[in-house]
Image (cartoon, rainbow, N blue to C red; front, top):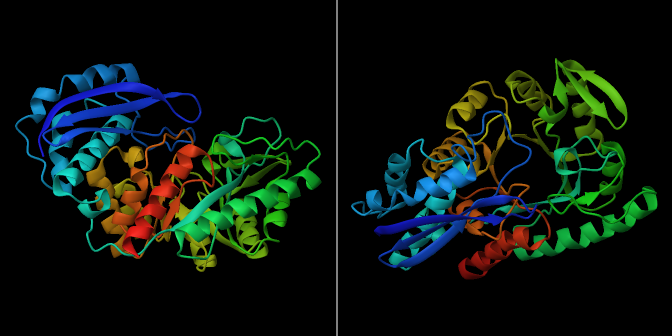
Length: 384
C-alpha cells in the first residue's frame, strides 16, 4: 500500500472540543481516521500535538512526498510512518495517521483491520461500561471523588453485555432519583450519570445489581503533597490510610476492578494492594500510560495485574503492540480504553480484538461510544 497524499483537519469531539481528523489518499482509495482526546491525562502521556492542533494540521500536509516511496505491507511497517514523522507531530495525530493507514492496508489485503494484527484472533473482550461519574470528567460542585463507577457483565457475548449495561444503567437512574435529592438525570463527559453522592453511597446502589463492579479512582487527580484530598466528604488520607481504605472498599463492595488507586508515581503502593487483594484486578493507567518502559517497571515491582491501553496516550501503534506483547507474556490483563473526548471512530474495537484484549472499556451509551461497541458486535457476528 502506497500513501500518495496526506491531509488533516479539525473536528469536534463528544465534548465539543477540537480534535484531529487525518485523511490519506492511497493506491487503493481514500481513508480517514480521527483521534479522541483525554481530559484526565497521566503525567507521562505523550503530548496530543507537537505545539497545537493547528500546527500539526499544517505539518502533516508537508509529509505527502516523503511517503510516496514507502510501501506499507504489514502492521509492523507502520514503523516506517513513525520514522518519517518522528517528533514532528503529537500523539493524537500519529494515532489518527496510523489508523487511516491500517484501514487502507486492510482494504488492499481484502481483510478486516483486526486481521492485520492477528488473523487467528478469536476471543472477544468483555465490556466495561461507565455508569456513574465523578472526578475530572464531571463539572458539578458536589460529586464523587472517584472518576468512574463501572459495570462489567460476566458474559463473553458483546451483544448481551451491551444490553445488560444499558438496562442496569437505566435502573441506576431510578435509584439515584430516590437517593439524591439534587439528581437531574444529567450525564458527564463520558455519558455517565452525574450525582452528588459519594463513592460508598454509589457502590451501595450498584452492589444490589447482579453484576461485577469496578472503579476508576484516578487518584492522581486529588493527590497533593503526600496526601489524598477527598472532598465528598472533606478529609485527607495518607498513603497508608489510602491503602487501608481501598482494601476495605474492595472487600466490602466486592470490587472486581480497581484502576489507579494511588498516584502515578507510587508503584510500591500498587504492589502492596495487589498482594493484599490478588483476586481483584489492580489496573494501571496514569501509572503506566501505555508505555513499555513504565509497564516493565510495574511488572518488575509486581505493581499491577492489568493495564489500560490507550493508543493515543503513547502515540505509536508500534509501541501499543510492544505493550500488548509484554503484558501477555507476563500475564497482565489488557483493557483497551476510550477517552473522555471521543469521536465516532471505531478502530479501537478492531485493535482490542486483534490484540486479544481481555476487556474493552468504552462507555455504555452515546453515539461516539456505541460506535466502538457496535463495531465489536459486528466482529462478533462475523467470527462466531
